[in-house]
Length: 114
Length: 108
Image (cartoon, rainbow over all chains, first blue to last red; front, side, top):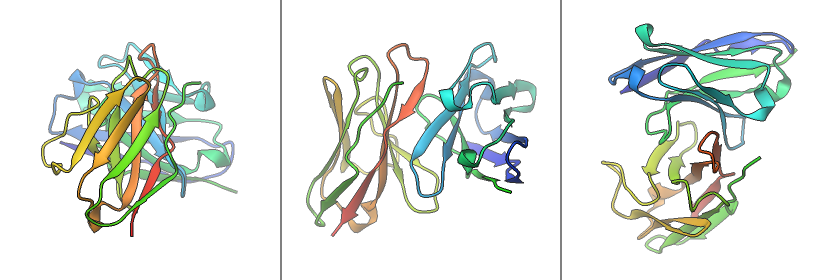
């Protein structure tokens, strides 16, 4: 099992970024998937998850209306579209297999700063 | 919003037993999971479904549940066990996931 995140970087407040997570080694279309973030020096925070077929999506209140989770099972890929970014969104973003979070990627760093 | 509560820190001497608790109202209904995270690394699952241990995790790691509290127990703590530990579960509707604030285990 391997999860590889990409798409992080430096973005100005109010800007947008799209994270990707490419999965391999398991039947991606059979699992809920999640994004989890960790601000510098802080704990883990669950951000959003999506059902196997994409028909259900949930997210933490602090990102509602700004972040959108999606997936492409044909490409074994998970995405996180992040809009109207704020300084407090600065974190390492991990994708993980829901609900046990038994496999994690290495994370991708998002820095929101002017 | 739903919360899981952990002690910020726990200290033990090598060879002793460390116990880390996690409290939450929905824990009688929802399974808990535990993760170990060392600096600069992604978290690693050490206990799933309250008390199950994934393959490759040492037997000294165990989990238990009682009412609204779950406990991660590390028996015969070793220096390599020094890390941050997080519990994770879902709210009562099983819709939202939540992590505890994390506990820093220090082996002194």
